[in-house]
Length: 91
Image (cartoon, rainbow, N blue to C red):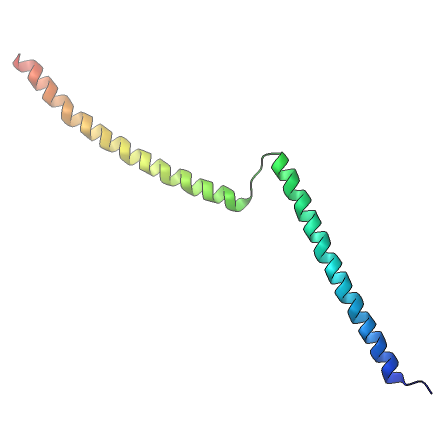
C-alpha cells in the first residue's frame, strides 16, 4: 500500500523547493535589470533622485551663503564710500 501522507509531503516539499528556486531567480533577474538600467542612466548622464536632492540642497545653501556675503560686501563698500567722498570734499 502507498502511504498518502508521505506522497503529499513529497509534493509539498517539491513545491516549496520550486518556490524558493523561483524566488532566487527573481532576485537575480531584478539585480540584472537594475544594473542594466543604471548603466543606461550613467551613459546618458542622469543621476539618481538622492544625488539630485543632495546637490540641490548644497546649491541652495551656497546660494544663501553667497547672498549673505554679497550683503556684507555691499555694507562694507557703503561704509567706505562716504569716507572717501568726505576726504575728497575736504581737499
